[in-house]
Length: 463
Image 1 (cartoon, one colour):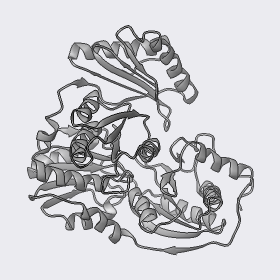
Image 2: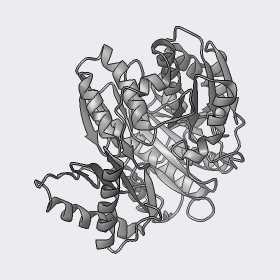
Image 3: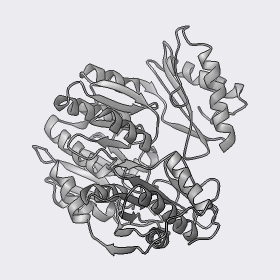
């Protein structure tokens, strides 16, 4: 048992556990996390837990230490090895296990790593993550003689991904693994799909030598766009470091953002789930919510965060949810967790059946918007600043202004809408605006700058 272990105060976060290797996170922390999480699992009646890890250089060492911690609570630990995060989620559901734990730094810099967890069928987040810290700090831990076994689930996972491909014509598709964990399964997956497949950076390399694995950043999609042009491909699909977020470009090389992807998926899913609730986060375009309603669905705006969206999805029985960052969740035909390779298969099938990706996107009305702009603000200050801005915005409500404070503040005006929220995973504020005209967008950006200035915060350069 780890005696009197204390976690660095920045490690236990809202949606997961995350830190910088050698500075705020190391093997002792991983062992303690295994003990704390294992205690949660055992006290919930569980006996079997799966563990996997991504391609980061620090992941194998953290996995070994975490397994030791899990076994110290008496659990049977199924070690599935290297692979994407959704393969871990799949293992828990496929084998009907009691819990799962994934060691991954997701899309963060190479020196970061962390842990994503599920208990039963649901995500572990918020108060449960804090409870792990309290159990460890208070040494309130279950002890027992556990065991482990190694199991290769990759073939079952790949077969399940390929099973829902429903295309009717062959496509040429470029897939960019970004040297992330998806590369471990991508070649075998594409071998099972019809058409021509060009793979970029499929070698798993935790130094990410080609580009950073975050498909929400346009510069990280440049190689994918170039390959789509070079091969005259029908579609390009990219992934983040652990394979739970998808990025896409159409046949012209234009980026299809997460909310646009969700609108395309929703139009298809609502054909078999008429009237269903479709959930999106507060950063998503108003055109998405309008299109869901136009197609007979019930749009629901919810808080940003993959764990929060998964929980709301289970609560409402929604067949589909997603967020701007590319976390997209299919409960239609699938398990309801964020699985980017699965989303890629579904998108390929949809484009094959319905026509070009550009055509599918064209049903959304054109708008003028900013990308998701993130800028550094101290951890303590960011939440207080948003509270101040919420209070000022509410004072304007009813004067041609609608205010939604479910997650930060989203203000709707005659020009469009603007958003400011505090990230739960980084020391940043997130801003976004969307308007019906370029002039309207400038006015919305001006509102954001003004609100930040009133709270003593410098707006990001060029915003």
